[in-house]
Amino acid sequence: MESAKLIAGLTRIVRDVGLAEELAQEALVAALEQWPTEGVPPKPAAWLMTIAKRRGIDRLRREERRDQKYAEIARDLDVEQGDHAAEVAAALDDHIEDDLLRLVFVACHPVLSTDARLAMTLRVIGGLRTDEIARAFLVPEATIAQRIVRAKRTLAASGVPFEIPEGADRAARLSSVLEVIYLIFNEGYAATAGDDWLRPALCDEALRLGRILAELAPGEAEVHGLVALMEIQASRASARVDVSGEPVLLLDQDRGRWDQLLIRRGLTALERADSLGQPAGPYVVQAAIAACHARARTPEETDWTRIVGLYGVLAAMVSSPVVELNRAVAVGMARGPAEGLALVDALVAEGALAEYHLLPSVRGDLLVKLDRQEEARAEFERAASLTRNERERSLLLGRAADCASG
Image (cartoon, rainbow, N blue to C red; front, side):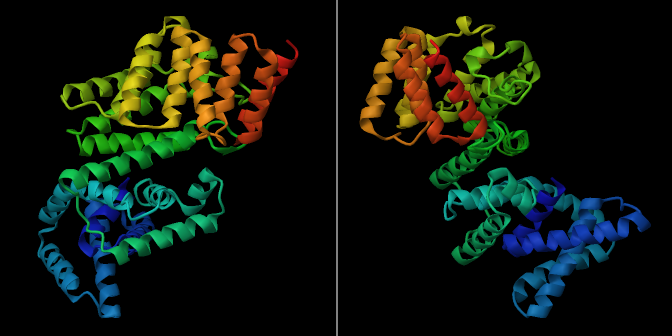
């Protein structure tokens, strides 16, 4: 977190995320070298910033560029050297929260691809190393390194300002920020590929970023909505897998293992979002759906009718076949599997989710409830052939085998 704050403060000064990251790393290395022998200074953050600025001045001098920035940084240093370090540190503190939020917006700028935004956010805000990001997304380390390098070049070449946008631009950029954080969370909650169903570190990191954003932007209902959604979903993490790491579906989970603290935090965040009096956005609505599950002591007590209604609201906001698929599941629970299957079959006819493994998985589940076992078996086998997650494939093949055995 201190690294992210440092990078944010430096980016405000040098207007270059890549350079700011390098200066921050140099300052942190200096701290590792000096603090063990000289002791930790009274104001570590101000010390790091001062060192980073001095390294920046050296860099600018060597490269004979950015004279104006050099003068600005040098003036700051002159103040500090005049025994006014405390005042400068206080001024830095005043900037930190805004700087961090600016950095979040820069890392998630639409000029970058989604993959680049994910990599940049985890690197500069989350503080993850390149190899950690690569391991999380199951891609070669060199690929992530290239994405980050290209992202920094793209930001620099595009002249993306280090500022929090206003009005419609802010809404659009905030949407991008929330999307990236939720993508990170979802990859941790249900891994796309690999041998593990969950990647808790990614969930934790996304939740931490969401909580930071909620502190930095307390007036944005959608931010609280996203935090509420992630808190409630994260509450089920330990119940989502059995002792051998196999996935456990929502209706089969031991709800006694759901984390009640996270549920309370999620419901509080949802109340905060509602209290702002803003029109509900997609994350607030999804959080409300998650809250319906969280409040039910058993699957039978779940208010599926309300969930169907909320999915209708969500579908009106976000026209997406995935939302329609989720609505079909809820309809199947509220009104019976035949009605749910009709909605799923409509999606099959559209062909929009032809390669999405959850479409045949949901269809297979509904067919089981209609006692059409042979058709269900074929659907589960097709779903297993489409997923890239080994744990999920094992679960689906097991369900197919259950259908075959009657």
